[in-house]
Length: 501
Image (cartoon, rainbow, N blue to C red):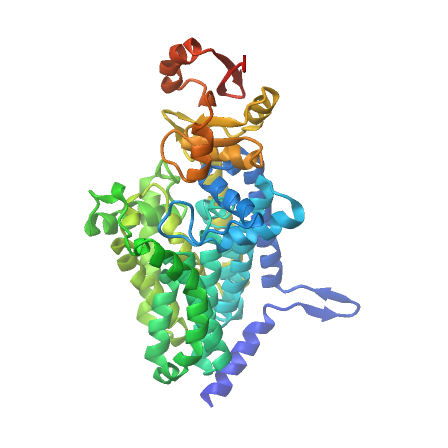
């Protein structure tokens, strides 16, 4: 009787997401229109980002692109260059795109963007099994258009975030399926997804660990399916294992030097004071200024936390995996020393589908859904405009921001016949990737790829590139000129080249 009633409710709610057929015409449902509007709005925002300084490539992204280029030449790295965590599946996906369309900044970024778009679809599928059909559509729409930071971050090809969220959602969805029906095939795919997820990023555990604990708690008999999951798990994790066997299990050392002064309590406090308000769109990323003032900001955070408390108190069984995941997140967040940096909420990206669905769980009427969509979109636009105005997302080369366009530098270097370059980290790897390695540059500081560094430093007189206005360039000017270098300016950069004679 209860099952019949539940199924009837789901059917009734599902009808609200569909269109209505009339005499010779089709009228889309309110939630269908909502999703279309959100999809278009999200795409428009991202096109604007990619066409503005907000969409400029940075060297961390360039490394991902360079790894993809090297994969096409047969050089496959299991982990991000000179990193002890972060797999290369996303770079492999970019390599496939490059093989068809050629390498470019746009192709690299669209690969990551496609993974986040696929994650939006998976968010909807997870939502159908947790919050219901209408709320699933509303949650997926919110995931796609908010907050401002996520919209911007989904255009950043940072090697493993897009793939990590995608795989984490596959794990979540398969766990939900296994809770309903113990399928050997789903168990096999779950094992593979967990293995690939572990290889891709420890951040996958934000979604994977809680939902797997929940699965065993709610269906203990699923343990009998472990033998079917093991082959896929071994296959997926094999590249990570092979790399760590050769490198002394460095992936288990997750304590960045910069986090030495950070404590568990500090990171937990920062989560609620800076990170979550930024994720809700109430603070501006990087500057951490309150978008609508501190009073509105703190009230907004309080309302969000109170809403979560209400969902916990009501204890809707279908929401259990979402609520458990969100409840455990502060603990997992504060345990990771990588979260010492609180000026941007990058590690909340992994939790974003769960937060969107929990918010969507209340949006089961068209009016609520449209109001929430409008509010979220307004905050996203306002946040992105403020980010664009402040320009604090730009990395610093020595002591000044790096201009977004390197085309003039690369053109000048090629015109002067220079193909070996020394530059700051945030310039060097961009030059290598954006020139498709016609010009090889290496960092004057932290080196990601040793073969290029060796190649450049063997050159007697490599070119030098600085950001115009840098005090480092001013200090080096006299020495470089005394060694026969000419000083050239282009597009906010200073380039030093030496005549072959």
